[in-house]
Image 1 (tube, rainbow, N blue to C red):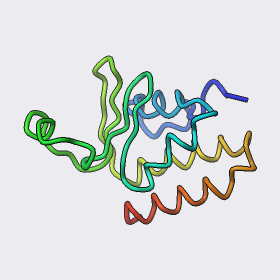
Image 2: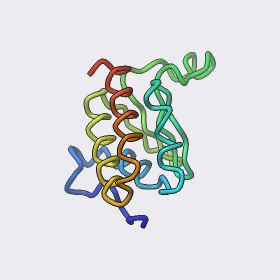
Image 3: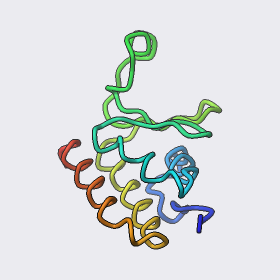
Length: 124
């Protein structure tokens, strides 16, 4: 059962983090695990409304024109974007995974593996 929102307004640490909630909330249940799996390797993903990007996702042109950033960038196709540090990123990832597991407890081991690998990759 897809919830309308995994991250709610009360979960948000800052209202400027709206792109994070919009992107994580737009991941369909049937592709959730496949979508978040690359996060464990420090790689981002794109969805219909925007993208989650790590610095190593950028190509030379993007680095030259936009510059490198530290953390994780969430950008919506309307131009709204934010860069957050790794602990903030992980905070939101943990929330969306916890909510997902309420509906799909059978995926617990896979989610734990993704979270653990992500924590290790980001050195948290």
